[in-house]
Amino acid sequence: MSPYILATLLFSLGLGTTITFASSHWLLAWMGLEMNTLAIIPLMAQNHHPRAVEATTKYFLTQATAAAMLLFASTTNAWLTGEWSIEQMTHPIPTTMIVIALALKIGLAPVHAWLPEVLQGLDLTTGLILSTWQKLAPFTLLLQIHPTNPTILIGLGLASTLIGGWGGLNQTQLRKVLAYSSIAHLGWMILVLQFSPSLTLLTLLTYFVMTFSTFLVFKVNKATNINSLATSWAKAPALTALTPLVLLSLGGLPPLTGFMPKWLILQELSKQDLAPLATIAALSALLSLYFYLRLSYAMTLTMSPNNLSGTTVWRLPSTQLTLPLAISLIATLSLLPLTPAAMALLSP
Image (cartoon, rainbow, N blue to C red; front, side):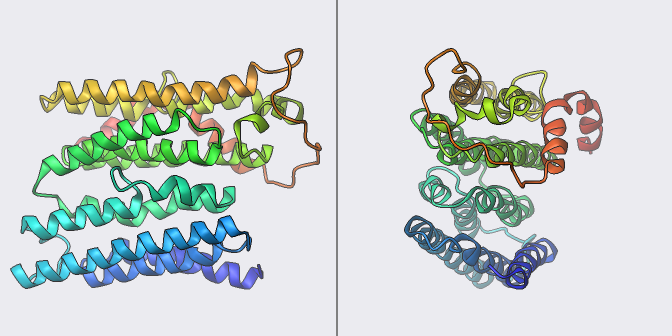
């Protein structure tokens, strides 16, 4: 792809998200989301591979459906209440429709089925954009609307944590594992959204940091399935030693960064007298932890002199910049001591 076209598409991607951030009118927010979708589609289809084209088509259809639903719900809200403002969502019917439309946009269960399929068809760089940047605009809208019906958010959150855990158990493709990991993390964010929006934002940012480093690790190793991880120790031994820690941070184990949002969310849910919900969420985290441990095992415990499960690939020098990976690895592994500072920022 020409660098000029790439720059234009990335600029449009940023502009679409910024327009949604800055908007207080539903039509402007919808326009930002549409710009976002249309800018990433050429990036997704740039490989001209049948799988990439199929993934792009699936993504376009789901995003178009969600955008149409959003537009319909905002028009219905204007018809019922006379308000186009995002903050003035008072009627339960359009509010519920908008929550479902935004859930479809970011891939929350039970409207999640497109996300693993789409992510599997993309290269790791575009997959990283889809897993991180594309979640920002819908999340800002979810944070702004203050849904009147708490049950739907708890239902979506709980379904996402459970399906995100169960769905990833049987996967051998790394991109599908990361897609189910994304669904589970989004579920945690949605669970606490109505009780502490700032905590949702903190969870989103920590998820971005951890996912960024995971995608970059796989990109350095040129790994797309579990078997190809088994030979990564010969290529980058230091990185192979650190990667299990990154995966366990995604799983939410102390003393790593990923423990912080889970700990604060469980604490907040307990404060709201939702101990059974907190218990189910904590148990669902064990499901996710199992498949992160599986990836860690494949990377580090199948080394020589054991029989290799994957074929050794050519060890060509990597052209990827290592500074972003180094910074994100440090952030993924060592931000837990900053929890008191995060809590001070979160407290109203």
